[in-house]
Length: 347
Image (cartoon, rainbow, N blue to C red; front, top):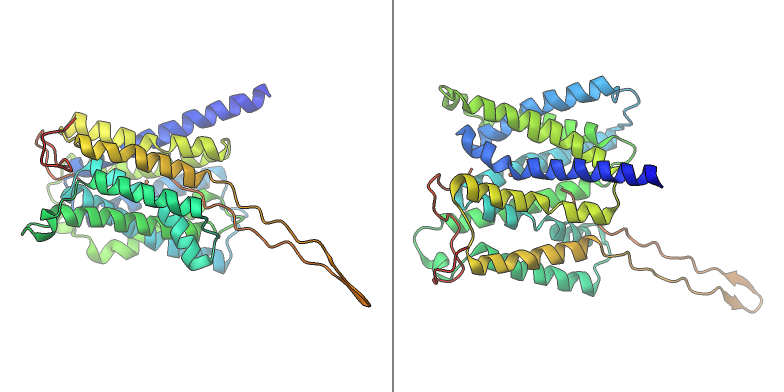
């Protein structure tokens, strides 16, 4: 028992560290000074070196478990992941790290909805209700006003849309990756970042990287720390922790991101926007930790002169698990994210 407790404590420390690192991702993106496409290109390049080196040192390539089908699914998941990062980093520029991150954290709800639409996974009334609650919170957090739809500058609105689309792509990647079994997650992640190198090469502007200077350090950090080290910590923790604790600790990521955005750039969300955060958090936990619906089997039907007909138990789709991944409008110490009402109600 003591051994299990020690193992869980270690997993808790590892996942907390991984989520805290994830919360500083936006700072590295902004400070690099590079465009979103360039940032993601160098992230996957340096990240592939880090993950590849780790997998090689651990001997993970021996008996890797990949088949053509599993490799194809990993590649497809990589396409979704890579463009998810591009959209999220663009959202940082158009909104703020805080707002983009909270909006992006609606990923679990997309996993549930997409699972129901694409794979006929069971969507209960309770889950549907919590998803409605989450998107009510999303409306508050976004701070969108009717004037945003009629004004000439739709940059902020575009940023919200980019964060939502990023979350959608992340949800698609999660659903695809869930269908890969018998392969270490480190190798799946390695395939996904390797896919990004040729995929983003046509979009990368290497001429713009001249004179980057110290920005290179931030880009290397994104690959080695936020892709290599963070993934190793995260996957190691997953093997030691129950789903409930993983779901709770995942919220370390947006919490750290909001604090970091406020401390470094002076960006903060308004009071009305802040009211939406607990709605999203509560709904996410309820959806993630919901137990699978049990379907009882019918009793065998006895028919005269006919062999008993055995009614088999229908299979129940497992509850989709949320998975844990992040440039801002300006460096000035002012709120890049507006309050949802004209009142000066910022915290």
